[in-house]
Each structure stands twice: as structure tokens, then as C-alpha cells.
Length: 206
Length: 387
Image (cartoon, rainbow over the protein chains, first blue to last red):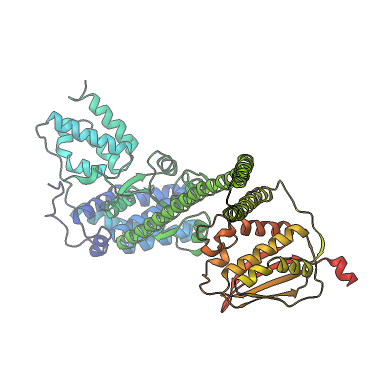
């Protein structure tokens, strides 16, 4: 019933301590995979972002970006990257001179690139939803629960989406990716707006 | 099968973090045991905390764009509706001063990132347990306070009611009683047999005296207790009063095979009201007579204390209970225990009230072989100076 297939789980990932990362999600591989995907989507361009914010003298944002990179690298078990991100964050906070900053940025950038490249190569593609016949009553029920969870800011909406992705994709082919992206980013207000819009334009209208 | 939509009785945890990865991680770890709500920024976190379904606990990231975790915590603690929700900070910053700052703001705990699931689960569980106990305790305290207030108000009403009642009853009894006693006297006079008439007359007189003095005592007691009467004290000699009362009771001492000995025959100057003091002494000695073992001595002596003279009346008696000390002079005590002093009726509470009104103290305490009354009265300093 789970939408993520376990078969293609990578054996090793350069720069990532898989057992450590798995322990952060209580050993649940589907959850670890979704965490890795989130990292890939969210951190891919972080080094470039930090460079541009630093050259724009926006050190607050640069520090926060390094801080987030440190936290998310720690979550997935990328310990070396986590360490470099921590050094970088500290360096930005105490405003060290640019010539000292460059090597720290470079080592962070290299470690991040290694992890990103590795993930892009080895992470099994997320199972794409497949078109299925839509049962109106079932759709109505799933949407009602989803609206309820979104209104209550309940994190369980993520799992509800995963469990019903075929149904939702088939019912809302145009809006599905937008709803999914908003839920994955936990921007639940936006997700609610998109879902209600999709419902109005679907077989559920009346 | 999909239990995510049926929160049931699970506690709700609010996770606040600007990084979706962290929210996912926390909801993954906590989702099996708790209902997890998520907020991506401080404003949203405050909205959820202030909603009609507030979380039981908040996991709060410190470093967020816009409103940071410290500010969210400060606003939560400043609002009565949210100040009791425990806050656990999540942070990579483990330096002491950051931690102190958070704890000063009212956070209950810190969890270092990267999050280790067993630690997170344990800390959350612990804080929820603590909160449960705190809530239970305050509910218990509030309930007990309410119960006490109700009980206290009822007692007050009962107390005031019983005093008014006593006064009304005394007045209401006295009028018809005069009629009954008058008719009774006429009826007695109509008895032809001289011997029978004398017996009845005797019994009638005793009953009348007891009834009248009970009504007087009740009225007086009520007036003293509700403050509508006070007692003016003058210097008197306690020795003189005791000797007068002992002489009056001489016959009843002999009738019960008791002897009375007073070991302070010289003047003892106190402040009191002569007639009321005599009544009080009579009551105490009568009570001692009723309780004392036959053919024993009742001994009285006076202790000269700094501001008071204390008369002690010591007697032998079996079966003095421990409750006696507390309830002996108490009119409404449920366990006024000595059936043999019951016929003194209101005289004992009246004596206690009279002594109190004279600025003195009266009590009874158990001794090895019996009991002793102690009656403390204020010294008359003027007379002592002249002494």
C-alpha cells in the first residue's frame, strides 16, 4: 500500500552515514528517502545562495542559510558537511575577513556538491502517480479529510497525500503537483487554497 | 487503517521550524504517538497556540527568519491563554548563554539538533507527564478551595443561626413557662395529702430551678457569644469567692462522700464580676463532684503567675477520655463525652464564655489519676501593689 518502493534503496552514499541518518527516522527507509529528497530539493543551491547573499552584504540571511544547511545535513547523517556548515555559520556570525571566508566556503561547497551529486545519481526516483479511475465518493471523503487536516495544520496531511496520490493526481491532474509541493514544504495555508481551488474545478463542484 | 485522521485522545504537539525537513523529521518521529501540528514561522505558531484547540506542548526552533523562537516564546508566556503550554527549544546552539536566555523566557527544556529520536520522544513524554501532574494538582487545589469555601460559609451561617436560635428560644420559653409554673403551684396546693404534697413540692421546685437557670444560661450565653452583652470586671478576692461557693456546696460534698480542700487561704486579687465568678466556680465544683471517684479529695490551689492567678481544681476520676480536653466546654461538640456532667447542661459552655468575657481562660486536662480544671484570671495590679 505504501507509495514509495523500498527496492532501490542505495547501499552507500558518499559523504553520508546511512545508518546514522536512518537512526534519525527510527530506521524507517521510506521516511529516510523522503528526507533525502527534501534535502536534495532544499539544499541543492545553498552554496550559491550563501555566496550571493555574502556579496550583497546580507550576512543575516547568509548565516541563517548556513545554519539551516548544518541542521539538515545533520538530519540525514552528512556529518562532514554538517561540520563545514557549522564552521561557515560561525565564521559568518563573527564576520571574519573575506579572504579567510573563501576557503571555508569552498570546502562547504565541495562537500555539498559531493552529497548532491551522489543523491542525484543514486536516489531512486520518486514513484510518479498513475492515472486511476476516480470514485467520486472516495475522492469526496479523502478531500474532506485533507481539508480538515490542512485547516488544523496537522502534519499527518503529508501521509494522507502519499497514500492517496494516484487518486488525487487522477482527479486533479493540473493542480496535483502544486498541492503536493505546498504540502511537502509544509506551507499548509497555500496547500489548502490550491486544494479548494482544485475541488471547485473538479467533479466535486456543485 | 489510516489512523492519521483520527486523533482520538492523543496529545497534540506543535512543531515550529522554518525548515520543512525538520518539520517532516519531527512529525515522523512523533507522529506514531502524538498528533503533530506544524508551523513554518513564528506568527503561524502563535495563531495555532491561541486557537480553540491549543497544543499540549510546543517544540520551537530558535533561529527563524522574521520572528525568532525567543520572541515567540516571550509572546506565549505573556498571554494568559498560552503561558501554561510547555515550550521546548530546538537548537544547534548549545552554548550556555543561549540556553540561559531561553530558560529565562520560560522554556522548560532544550533539545540539541540534529534531533535524536529517542531523546526527543523521551523529553516530550516527560514534559507532557509533568504538565499532566501540574494540571491535575492545580485542578485539585482549586476544587479543595471551593469545597472549603462552601463548608466555611455553611459553618458561619450555622453558627450565627444557632446563636440567634438560642436567644429566640429562651425568650419564647420563658413566657409560657411562667404560666405552667403558676398553674403547677396551684395544682400542688390542691393536693390534700400533706406528705405527698411536700414530696411533689420538692421535686417541682428543683425542676423549676433547673429549668429557669437553663433558660437564663442560654440567654446569657447567646448574648455573650453574639457580643450584645459584656461583663464589667472589678477587683475581687478569689479566695473569698471559692470559700463562699464551697460552703454553699458543703452538703453535696458530704452526700457524695467527697472532701474539698483549698490550699490558698490568703487573699488572691483578681479582676472579675463577683456573681458571675461565683456561678462559674459553682459549675466547676459541681462538675468535679459529678466526675470524682467517691471518697476521694478534691483539692484546689492557686498558682501565682506573672499576669494571672490560676486556680487549679484537682480530682481523682476514672475513664477520662482524651477528647475531653478539647470538647468539655464546647456547646456544639459532637463528642461531649461525660454523661455524668450532662445534667449541667449549658452551665459549662456558659462558664467558658463568662471567663472569656472576664479576660480569663478555663480548661480541663487529663492527669495520671484523674483530671484538673484550670481557671486563669487577670491579676488586679492595683491590689497587688497595695498587698
